[in-house]
Amino acid sequence: MLGIESPRKPISGKFAKELREALVRARTGNLNQSEKESIRRSEKISRKYNAIWK
Amino acid sequence: MLSGNKEEEYINLVFERIDDASVLSNFYCGIDEMDEFIHNKLQDYLNKTGCDTYTIKQGDEIVAMLSLGEDTLSLDDDDKDDMRSGFVPKPNIALDNKDFFSEKEFPAIEIAYLAVKKEKRKQGIGEYIISQVEEKAQRDNPECEFLTVEAYKTKKYSAVGFYSKCDFTPAEVPLSYKDTLRMYKVLHPTSPQE
Image (tube, rainbow over all chains, first blue to last red; front, side, top):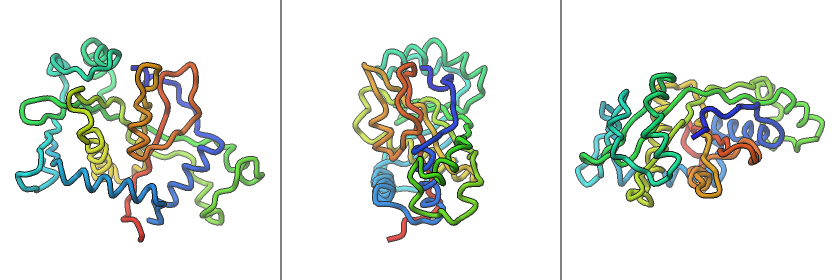
């Protein structure tokens, strides 16, 4: 598993644009449909499991 | 510490921090490279990095392992010029907000490793763990606005589909010399507006 050892370059181009847009949506609560659906899915799966952190 | 107070019909998953990788000696996720890492390199990784690593138990059975580290998402300083020049299409929102362009480094929590026992896949455990990492990050690191991951991606196995399903977004084009794809997920501090 090399993931954590992989070189990290700054995010650029369209990826940086998408990230900034997503961040503004999160900060304002003005989420898009995909993000709302993700939250709903998390809520649904949370009705099945219960986490206990030790 | 209890993070929930649910009735008994819920399946309890116990997240227990570990310093000793030998507790995972009988744990196999079915991905050869990951199992090899867990059994032969995880202890060294724990000793060197101090990353928070957890077993996730259902009853007495370890059904998953998780390791979290600190990360920073850095944006290329040229991206704002690219957007202003039109080389990259301008953002649809918040373009007038000067703060929009001034920030270029963001603290993040990295999912360094996440493995679910092969027999326990397709039951939503992985997705639930991600949701719990989100809650934990917002609870313990309120300044943190992102989760990141280097999603495993080889010809034999790819975790990119799983993380996409969990609403992670690629932060780069796939690179032939890497067996991972860097992805991120924005943490949502507010409820969605209907």
